[in-house]
Image 1: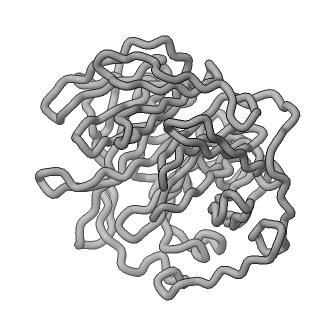
Image 2: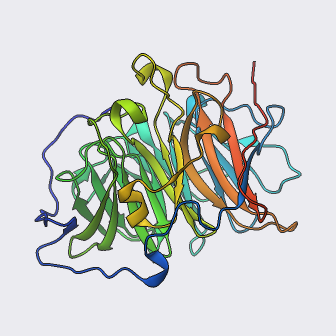
Length: 359
């Protein structure tokens, strides 16, 4: 689904031939720990398990789970136009009472104790002071003079909030408590784009339909670096590895590896195409990504289901951590949707899935 085109007001970028863009050249060195290595090196056993059983949380196109440092867990249930939350793993989930239209993502700014939510099909971001008694303390319909058009994701890093207009692709940076905002026009490189990621304080934009990931080097100067996936066949918001190449939903880094999801599903597949292949991949570094030196982990997730946003889950009191992935059916939303947690140990690589079925 694409937002209508409109006149863009923002930064104009000059594109450089080797993927780094700005008004001047920028040479990036590859640190020792980011040099290409075999995708089979240092493999660890990965398992996928259902994080929330249907009796606890009935998902319908859940797009994100978000973990607050105080123990609060939040699930964005897009298909039910709802946000569900609980304060601890022993609590039941409660739905916030707010008029939402296909929300996609939420984040939390602890300094001002405020949640910021992408209310996507209402073309706005809303700020909530509480989930228990939600009151909209701020409503944002435009940033830097540009209307929000179906904002998809929102993250917080370095004192700023970042959000994304998916098409045309515009990245916004704004203050959580002041009327300050900037826009970075990425439409020269990206088309339909779904996600933002924060890794080591850096912002990454998932350029879904073109199969690229953009790392923001200097927002104010308009400098970024582009990582292009190999074997891209055509530009599309969904597809399969054979038909389109990667259609990147999100990227995240967990325990020394990068992970990426793609919007692959049966209805976007040509006859005989494998819609599970490469829908979830992991790789050691970006040179491995651009050369296709990755592991296919699509078998860990339900057959024919779309993996969407990724969220790193920090170690809990039991010492368990993991990478959460929201999974849903594009064709039959709600039937087997849920949040899965990828975990790993030191014994090698395998994959086993406990199936989820919601009647």
